[in-house]
Image (tube, rainbow, N blue to C red; front, side, top):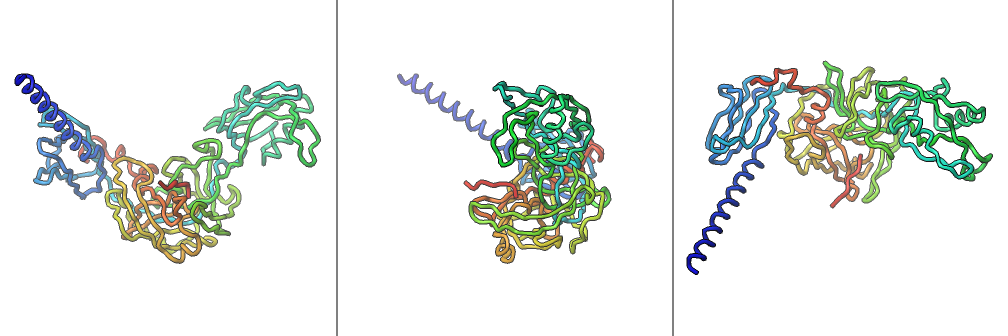
Length: 443
């Protein structure tokens, strides 16, 4: 009996040692980032537990300095350095990357912009079945090769202007017994498909003359409303805006085909309340007023190049861009437009900074404290997405979402991720491999 008890105690001790060792390894892994971005000349301390080491794979002299608190990363030049986290200097537990980038300066935005997903045509949000007058079901658009996200640009050689225009063209040609040639843009390709419309019994409406021909396409206007410009990089002409993905009611993400941003004027403010987000109402015209291209639509916003004049602002001076690790809880300001095209500054407080070593949204939680903005809008409202967040004279992020149940609070995305998405921090160009309970909605 005594021997059995000793074996049980021994097994328990071994199990405890294994669990403790596992927790020790896990703690070290979680406390050591897999990715670090630093400015040239900037240092960062990596807290490394005893028995663990960090080794520079490239063997760069002086890049890593061991001290009592851990390991200090001290960049020597621009570029990328590959590191390893090791246990007992034998077992490699994690690969690490340090990117050393130059300090970038941008002009903060705040201007209101209109978003055109395409300069012509209408977007196919989805294809649907149609039932003919005899009760049979058909999928003319789908079976003819039309896909959600396609841009319908022409019908029978005529540029289309609206859903009503397309419906009239389809009905006219189908009554003549002809196949309908539809010119479609998909990505960078433009092609024509020929479809045969189906005669359906339409729902009773005022002025309805009875059955009509349909192709089974749900179409949307190629506009995504009003947003806010975040930054402009002067030497490259690159910009970032919105701070979040553009989606349509029936497709996600929204397809972009020859997209443009245009100057917009804010004409009305609908105040937000708890449970009812507010909204900026703006006006903008066609692609003739375009001031920039849209080349990317991502979870961090829309990006492209400016091609025309942006409305002037008092914030014309370029400011440095802060890394995510440099953003602090405390006072800040946002730039946005409430009337016409005038960019104004409003006080906010950064309440929380979520540590992020990899690109992700919602890194910043902020609260509006400016009484003038609160009285006018109730806090963060739709259309404010992309409003730049400035702290200590640097661009730290952009407003992205509002808390539905508390419009005074919202989320922001780190400026670092937006600059990366715009292609302004690309280590491949710097010599890679050497030491070189609330529900948010889009604002």
